[in-house]
Image 1 (tube, one colour):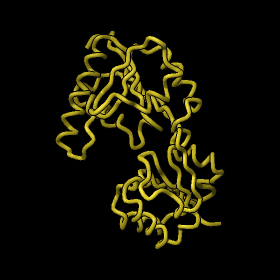
Image 2 (spheres, helix red, strand yellow):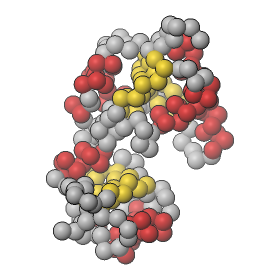
Image 3 (cartoon, rainbow, N blue to C red):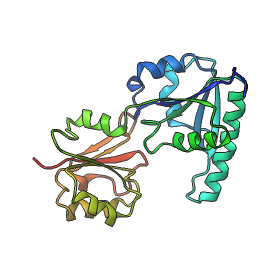
Length: 237
């Protein structure tokens, strides 16, 4: 690897509002050679790219990295290896690249898979992570919800996980955030009822985007939530 190899920046663009990018993120976006945008293999649309565009150079090259919408590990592995090789080739050309990701690059993010796969190709690639504001931090600010204080703990859970596991966790924590509530939403509502947390939970969808929904009554939330949905579950006080 030559000394002129480029740097890969994992940039968190936040939950939806372009004003919530960090100053560091905007400075990097204004100077990189390539912007990498993950999208479905069915189209080139990227929500993260849409959020970041006001901070990008007008003529910067955008490379779309396609990922199939599947949970088949073999298919996903091949997609990551293919995309990692694309990024490696760009870095080897001396290109500085910014990989955009919603929220933070290291929390339920596609960037983590890219980082791991790229490091498997060569551990000497320069990789820099720029943290971003998460959806639950932004929704806590929007709703005035205290996520944790004093000696309290905070659970960060996924709605994709088996609800019985989540039920056990909720019994042992003070406050919780449940991400990816588009999965198993009816079961998650029952879970909140069983753990006496239904009245304190707040449902948030598409925060800072068109179609934003904030519901303090979980029963008023859509039966089939949008992909960009989560819940804040603070302890009742």
